[in-house]
Length: 324
Image (cartoon, rainbow, N blue to C red; front, side, top):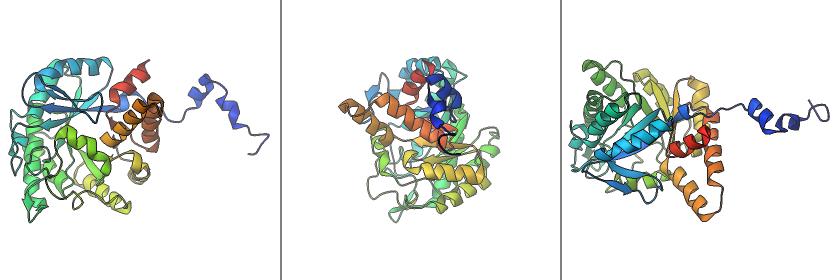
């Protein structure tokens, strides 16, 4: 095909034909909203680096859930900030922990809202790492038992899905075995399968109060330079029983999303992380960009790359645009 016989602009002439020819459709059903739940009462603490987001005590969840449901957002993912932290993160599986209590409140207020829980130890440990520390590093195998106990506690509280984000080897298998043994065969696992050691997580660490006390997470999160390794991680998690796999972050790793989609054609999520959100919000505040248009372009790019489910702090803003 060549000019003048082929004129691609014919199918861009107006909004109607552009909409009809659109190859990628973003809908509210693609969106998952992260929520940060904390201990105490009457708390709605703004997260300074993430405008529009808050640490919420469980008693303040109802109004938030009503808004989420009204916007048609189908799912949330919960992160907890406990009252007490210790070296082993034991409060992660307390029956009255903030996540466990939040699940119950959400399911009572809006049974149809799908509740996913983040399964990790970093918010609960005094050192801020994702498991048990031995010789100044996270000990993989002793951490698996704690992650399994946390996942079971979430299921017992009514979670619809658990999502391990720790990047310990073998955690999907350990969690699947524990869930099945406790009668939760129907609870799916969404694995943070390709989670990179990224600088884009900065605002999240303020929100979840999970900054490492020492060192970094390079010994367990993935090297940003690697792609083949991501395929091996995904293959392992699928073999261990993951129902959905995830790439995190999304924007710097669109190539990883596409490669995984092409290689496995497996249910795939992507996490549009805090740094991606905060950069757009900051540039919008400065008047440097049209924040709404950049938000939508960003989310469409993630969907176009191959993700079906997008975890994003933009969920409410995007839902308003999509429903307009």
